[in-house]
Amino acid sequence: MRSGKFQFYMLQFLYFCSMTANPFPFKVLFCFENESKILIEIKRTDIQSEDKSRIYKWLIIRKQNENENENLIGQLTFQSMEQTDGEQVRQFSEGTLIWDADQATFNDEAMKPVKAEEVSEEWLEIIARTT
Image 1 (spheres, one colour):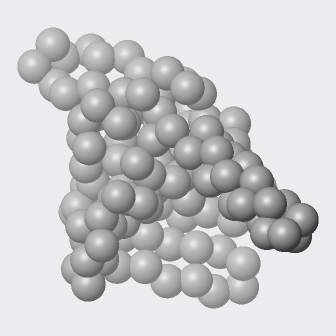
Image 2: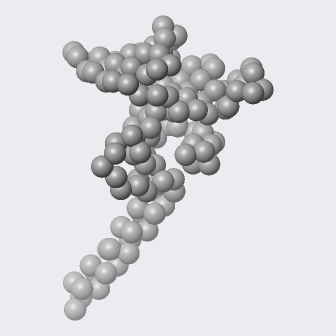
């Protein structure tokens, strides 16, 4: 009986942790940033589908909206990916993202890698409202 109560409370605790650990319906996989934009790959956790394009999304967030008609956040059009010798490449209709553990470039524009847990709450909320 005692182990049954322990299991019950442990399951409640784990459920609570899973609900509070990530309040958003997605997980950040990769993130890159510079002074004008953020590129971020998310994995939707609220969708079950065989179609990977519904689950995995690459987004671009413009920090400085120079053109009022331009959206603050948009989705990149994924074309292909490859990985060789620690370097990753993602090809989009909008350009090419290349990165390794220390640095990244998007269309030859320098970007810095950002750890998923360091993505600001503000940007996560913007993503949640628009995806």
